[in-house]
Length: 136
Length: 145
Image 1 (cartoon, one colour):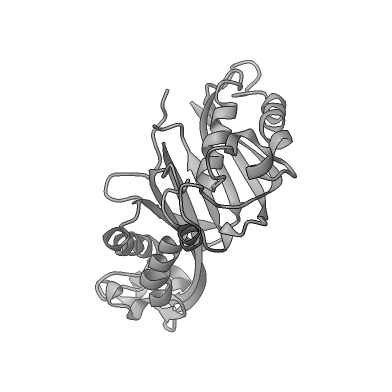
Image 2 (cartoon, helix red, strand yellow; image 1 turned 90 degrees about the vertical axis):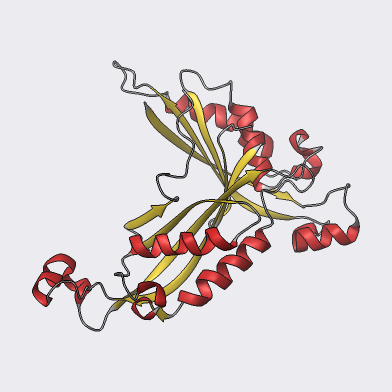
């Protein structure tokens, strides 16, 4: 079994605000991330898949296919969008890094041919990232 | 759903790798220039990974402000611009980055209560890093296949 990782980048805006919390609670919990005018990040996505190395091609998965599916399912949907206002995935959940990792996992899980999704890692900044492994 | 959150912190510290258990010749044989008498320093990167269920309201494993506060108080303020050999943690052990990584893990495991500490990774230079996830663990889920 070999793990293979492909990176992609996208830039999006978001804010942190829950309708289940009062204004004061939102501001206390989320700080400046609760600014309703939003703010943005350059996100880096790392998608790791696992699989057996094909004895003929030497591939776990065709990287071009993996790149295409990441772009079609994630980058084209999220890039240069306001995640709260324009992306269906975040209609009912806040687009935190944790929720981005989970949403991206759901988008990719059954769409990678020949390999199994192992991990989604999303960097919000170079010093902050979230991982999701499909765990309940 | 269980997710993992990682945050990286920087600190600069000096150390000297030398043990009184061995003579000078053997120290230099083992530690090389790291045994030079006046020490040397690194820009360390401490990467802390915590895990937990994502809160359905906040969307967070834990509040980043709580993690930052704990790591800064317990680790960064203690070791930044310090000589590791003089810290009480290293009175009886060599401040290799393996040992430093384990010390940081224990400092945080005992004090960070808002999520589960999974792993501490310490980068000593851009070419070498060390990870500790508690006794007998390595900090990431095993393959699900």
